[in-house]
Length: 133
Image 1: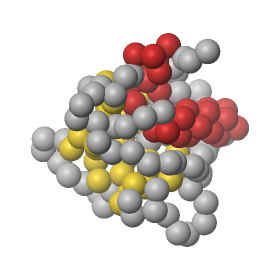
Image 2 (image 1 turned 45 degrees about the vertical axis):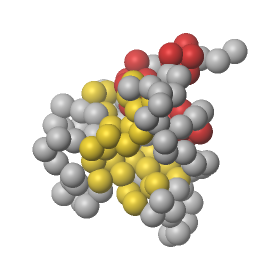
Image 3 (image 1 turned 180 degrees about the vertical axis):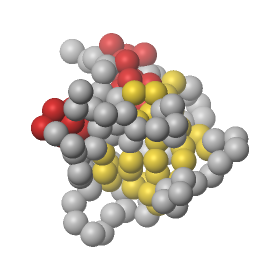
C-alpha cells in the first residue's frame, strides 16, 4: 500500500526534474542522497532549505543515526517516486558551505514537509536541534 504522503504528492505540470537516486557512496557524486536534507543532483550539491534532518555522517548518538538513516531512505523513496521541482529561495541562493538552497516539491507540496509530517525531520528554524534528547 502507498503511504498517505505519496498519494497526496501527485506530480504537477511544472515538475520536470527526474532521476534515479540512491545513497551517496564514495567521492564521485553526481545524483545521490547524502542524508535527509542534502542531495547531489546533476553534479550540484543541494541543501533542502525548508527542513533540518538528523545527521548520518557525524551523529551525536545512536538515536540520531537511526532517525537519520530512516530520513535518508525516505527522501530517496520520495525522490524516486516521480518528477519534482527545485524551487530557489527568493533571497538566498547558497548556504555558507556553497550548497544550493532549494525546496524540493512535487505538485506544489514540499518533499521535506513529508519528512516533517512523518517525524523524520523538523522545519528549518535557523539552527540545528539536538536529536539526542
